[in-house]
Amino acid sequence: MNGSVNGGPAPLQLLDLRGKKGLIIGIANDQSIAYGCAKHCHAYGAELAITYLNEKSDKYVRPLAESLYAPIVMPCDVREDGQLEAVFDAIKEKWGRLDFVIHSIAYANRDDLHGRVTDCSREGFALAMDVSCFSFVRCAKLAEPLMTNGGSLITVSFYGGRKVVEHYNVMGPVKAALESTTKYLAHELGPKGIRVVALSPGPLKTRAASGIDRFDELMDAAAAKAPTHQLADINDCGSFAAYLVSDLAKSVTGTTLFIDGGAHIVG
Figure 1 (cartoon, helix red, strand yellow):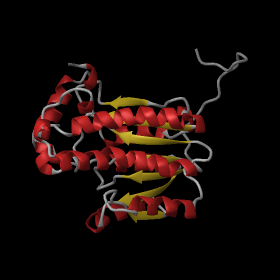
Figure 2 (tube, one colour):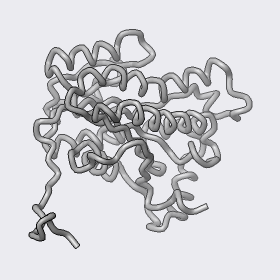
Figure 3 (cartoon, helix red, strand yellow):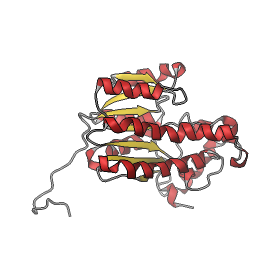
Figure 4 (cartoon, helix red, strand yellow):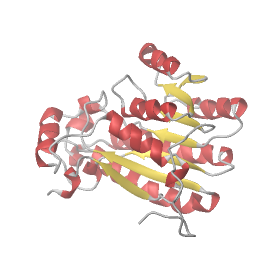
């Protein structure tokens, strides 16, 4: 039963991100999970800073950022020294604070991604871990001094980090590390009111996913076994992310939340 503590009707709480400032890392095009998140956060009133990978991706990302009226649009390749730091410096200068970060980037060399984990190169493993996992740690460190009133850090995982998924290969151990990192960051930053959550959508047809071998088969299998018999899309991810960065989710932290039609519960 819904009701206030004094027995009267509970006030209706609506999702409202007006006044919140957020950073979105990982938009490649209009099919990106990060774009779904950006769209929904903007729709609920948040002001956004948006990054793009490099000059080649600028032409795809900038029109999307402009459609969302983002006042900060900057390059950010986490492999390049100083680029991530420059983004946070711009946020500090423009806003002086930050309420949320949505981190949706992952990368592995093609040969390492398509080969067995057993055969993964040392350099390739380190690169995949650096871009896909350690960059989230770097975001947390840079965001912490800007989140003076608390905030939220959201990253994107996949159930291949918990169970063996054919052809997911080296990204499985990397996503497992990312989910563990989420827990430790949540524990360390919780006293400052900073929440940390990983979203785990099922397979989505994104640019990043296209690099996984036989990904269409993975999508078909996931849809077939999911209780809903359908896959999530970037809008499902976006609406959930908007909730998570809102004050309505103030007690949600340190966990991985699935948005996959229940596929993760079926063996």
